[in-house]
Length: 244
Image (tube, rainbow, N blue to C red; front, side, top):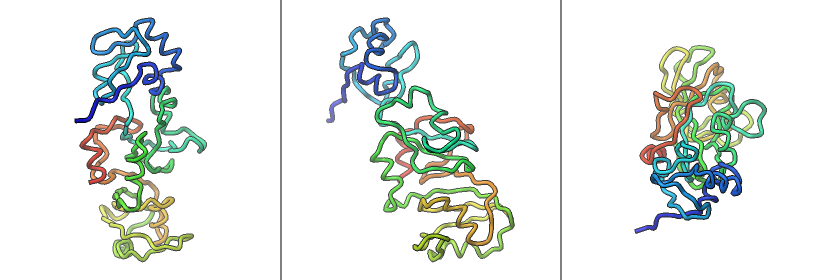
């Protein structure tokens, strides 16, 4: 039976972005940290780090942020980027400001360009991130594409053939599944993550994507109750479904 991991209170809260260890000591001195209904008085006290910590601990009368490892599902809105380095508003700005100081830091699992909306995963779990993006995992990603021109009917066979080579690439794409849902709208499921892959695939067959939305990664669908810009932690069963 594994032991419950323990951490010093000041180090734990500092790693969650609540401030320096000195600032955490000030919070404790002012009776602002409570665990299981008891005011904590020692910033060096060891506390159990479990997934239910937000239900057991409060900081300044609010539930403590979830500890690592943490994976979030976000409904990425339009005109938001997935990188700290790209110009423009980033998905990290949709999270609590203090989360930018979390250790380990949060990273997106793959990226959606600013013109693509939908399901985005964000995590501080490096091992999980690499499992999802590894080509050996073959994690499927489904996109709903709105097109400039009607489909002609032969595109699904081309995408499924495993012989399509995109402009600028040398290796053919892995087979992909195209499911038309209207004259100018279709689902496309891919298992790779090449640069602007979906847009480039439709360009390769003479069409242009005017809107793109990702609604599924592996067995996880974008929650229907998650509005654009909203996010929440994934559950253990949802995280398992991503790799199922």
